[in-house]
Amino acid sequence: MGFVDYSAEGQIGIITINRPKALNALNADVLEDLKAVLEGVDQEAVRCLIITGAGEKSFVAGADIAQMSTLTKAEGEAFGKKGNDIFRALEVFPIPVIAAVNGFALGGGCELAMSCDFRICSDNAMFGQPEVGLGITPGFGGTQRLARLIGPGMAKQLIYSARNIKADEALRIGLVNAVYPQAELMDQAKKIASGIAKNAPIAVRACKKAINEGLEVCMDEAIVIEEKLFGSCFETADQKEGMGAFLEKRKDKNFINR
Ligand code: DAK
Image (cartoon, rainbow, N blue to C red; front, side, top):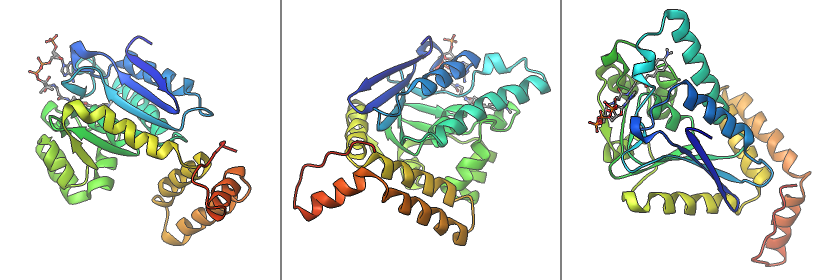
């Protein structure tokens, strides 16, 4: 792929936004490449995805300002829809996705990270939604996901002030789960991904679906979503394997994604 690399290491898939000359900024081609990479992921073999940026400076420094600068209203809406559709596909992607944020995650970069299941970052990471300083609103879901993740008050302050925050503040407000030295970030991401990959994949996917879908409805409906998904696990071979291993006092479990 031109601007987005993909590699699989065992059961872990690694997506790398690769446009380092522009700090991995998202233009239409990058978005198309990301869409194609996601569509090509082998959902049978891969049990966890990691998304990161090429180089040591930037995860994604936002949507491409040069490309956006001449958009008309209609073109702006179309560009927003293109990004939103892809980010939403990532958010509801059946397999868990970890954002390994290795530097700037600004504007569309912060929005991309927020579309993942959770975020870890390097100590040089910087997050922010600087759009109002450019005369626009966040356009790839930033107003919605940031408010849901860190609460409306904190999200409004960050978005209205266009203030970028460093890794330690991102950790404090719950935007990231952990901060690591830059050199350790990918190893740590792979370690977390391996920990996820060793569990029953159908159950992990059901948890993702239950959390995502449950958060969009009231608690009475949310617990029914969980009940249904819980019940569906009892039709899987992996439930029998997981519980069988416990009862037989076996440490080795062989989850087959069935
Ligand atoms: N777009 C295009 N090019 C970018 C870029 C970006 N977002 N960020 C960096 N680059 C390019 C720079 O232009 C420069 O290119 P050359 O001049 O070398 O050709 C190269 O990357 C290196 O950048 P710098 O020389 O500026 O590097 P520094 O280390 O000095 O500064 C920086 C790094 C990240 C602080 C700085 O580059 C910067 O402030 N970048 C812009 C960050 C930003 O404002 N990001 C948010 C973009 S707005 C919507 C859809 C989407 C969105 C909104 C609405 N709808 C359709 C409704 C999303 C909006 C955004 O993401």
